[in-house]
Image (cartoon, rainbow, N blue to C red; front, top):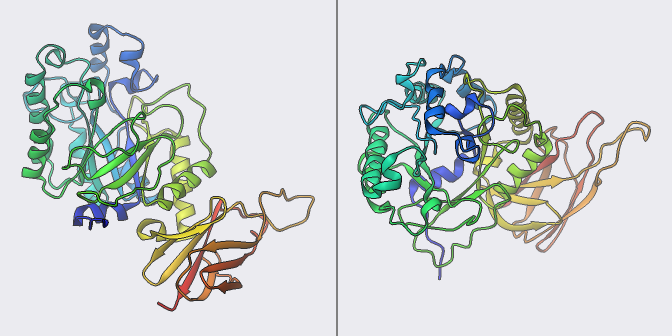
Length: 412
């Protein structure tokens, strides 16, 4: 058996490495997460009143996309319609339950796509497949599926070139025929190079599905290595992750992950070749909360110090101890080292892990030189066959990158 060669669009998607997920809708005004309609059992007649106060007055697509650019984001996946059934785009007569028919009066997806193209960010569209509001979803499923396809066709034909579609909801009716072939055919007709993803949810992480899909998903948790031996096609992998416990805005959710945890999770994704799709949830007015913006900017600063191999570097069967790993790009290897200590006076430094010799196995290429990407310091090393031992110096006082990267030149 052999590993299939990835199609061009899939290879390009893998090289994006880092994406931004944005969950925004009517639910954002309530500030209790994106499932508030379902979890709180709010009557539809009451919930629909949120359309009367949906202004998106602080939704500034250019500001959001420029912030993503500064964070090192390569693509953004925005909720065009979530499970509540409300659309951020002009549904062009399919219904009036959309942003243009609220006090907002704007097609937010048009603004989003235009901003992405301006900043050279690739726009992706999240679109629910289930719908808690639609009558036919419960009573005439075939008619509902036609409505879903018609909705997706609008997104395929009215916004120029799209990077991909991210579907979510088939897990709600596992025994139903979702007519996936017909849905994906709409996309292939109008957007042949679009990546197609259909989320398998938290209960089926990493499972492949319809052969037209291009990537498997890992929701929360950590991605596992893909075993592509004997697969009929090459699937990419992507893990989506929240900064706190909600995808949509939670006004009283203060349980944020630390910047260090987000950096380590990003590295854990790239260690196995998976993209990292990190979520933000704008407020009801459409503004990214300051904490979320700060965490994104922190990741961008980390990337600026550790190099861009995090995007195009590939897993290469080199193994380190603990969380340490290596990626390969061209004739260079990049060693990602965790838990180094800080050098300094014992009165002001706190030990975490330690500096010193770090061992990597499976290093077949002859190493010429190694240096830290953040400061250029040359590192000594010993190579014995496929075993490489790098003398990893500690951080200077006032520095801690969480994961430090050593770049190695090889004789290949």
